[in-house]
Length: 378
View 1 (tube, rainbow, N blue to C red):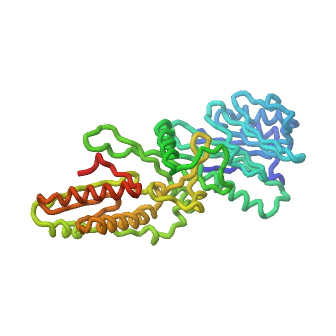
View 2: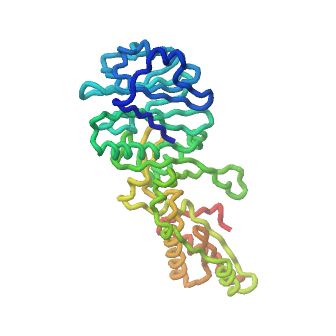
View 3: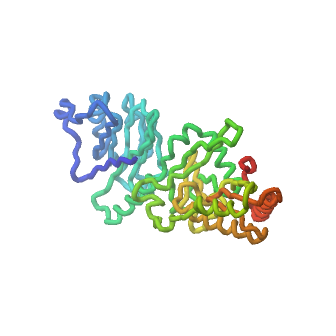
């Protein structure tokens, strides 16, 4: 979630002293209260601003100021208000401008300067409350003479921020996620870590962890890393994928039953499962920019098809059909069916055909680099 605090220089004035006495901010006792004010030189009006904050400090969580006219040689002590921490962004190239934000000491917040586009005067903060998803506050100053392109650049900056907040599970299981990412890097399926974006147009989507079902006979479950490619609604990666491309038709129960019935009474059946099925499909380098994520202040991007992409099942089904055909061709047997990444291999009773087909399937998978979950075979 992103909130933008925007002050326009031509229509906001400093609150008069006689209004301050009436507690003009009219803050509510619940929720997160944020105020933005065009101050037009903070130092000349600091006593007045300090009074505003002090009088309203019971419910005032964040107070943003634009056109502070501060320079780097002015330290924070000259602008300090008890009970509040300071975040600021001074204009470097010429006079004017400048942003400063006061945030209550009790609120967990960090500066997200990585979200700012250098040509804009914006100050991004990430706010986090216990048991809640973090949200962004962006304090913005748009000079009166800004060109029309300012709006497009500003929209681009906001879109970037929409992509960055990970799921709560990344906080709850941070060490497990870190271990998972390292393994994926070692397997060549994720690239990183990068301190800066490896691509200027890298699209970031939230990541998280979900527990996998424990293997038979075990009470210990593993973890699956997921990427929330449907966020934000309406402008996500998945929002622009044609639903027709995600359409897939799996084998039917009747077809599998027909294959088994042809083998007669007492047919031997075996099942084999492919490990990390979707991750076997490598992304085209042109698509790397679409599948970025951020973790522990580092950037990464996917090199293999991630969980969460609606076309994943349809794409893997094409590969699974090829694998089924290859086993049929090399073994000269038709008694093989698959349902996504699960393969059913069958043979006539007491002839060892089922075991032979399973061994043939295992050999072919080994030759082409397809890992199998041996603990799941039946």
